[in-house]
Length: 251
Image 1 (cartoon, rainbow, N blue to C red):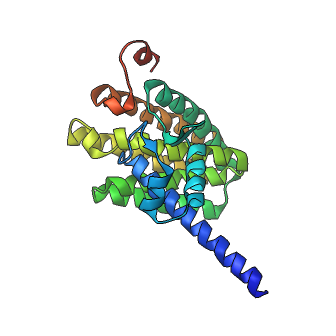
Image 2 (cartoon, rainbow, N blue to C red):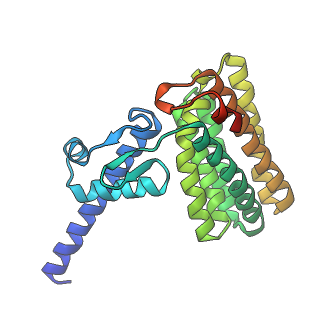
Image 3 (cartoon, helix red, strand yellow):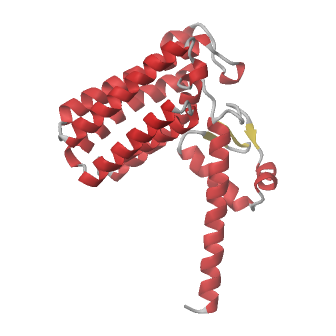
């Protein structure tokens, strides 16, 4: 390889690393509500904060917009995606459908290696639960379902499902962590059901039982929907732009 080609490759690698850095940092701030729904994202400010050029920041914003965490507004730049009742309702509806299909196909098409990876992430979730590490639980849950997404062996559906899982991280922070529950007992009961369903999902996929896998995926999505509905009626914030009335009736 010539020096010029090597130099261009190095520059490209550095830009890619900068974009990934900006993406990861922004995603964490959005899903943790350090950046609140509807907040403007000024490119110049982000460039200064992350110590990168404008191009990596723009690439990160475009990627986050594709995942539903950022809105790109014509002539206004970017802002953190809002979280109104309707936004959450539409997400949960779409998530229910995609999760059932992805899980059914995963049961039919999975490899033994993918089943082993699911079991690793299932155990990681349970370990994080025992250690009372809510953030690690959310991360392990994401990886667990991401492996199922890969096992469906349809790249278009997998990409859509991963986008939904990413958007779901923000909703999960509002409803699934221990501080979101009224009592410790209710929290442990809810997570206990998740643990049971994770184990049964792995077993159904291992047995290539598509019907059972889809049934469990439906139950899993319904469990999340009910928990989100309960949590949002108890802990609504102005930043979420949730109003009672017609919008609430749609949930």
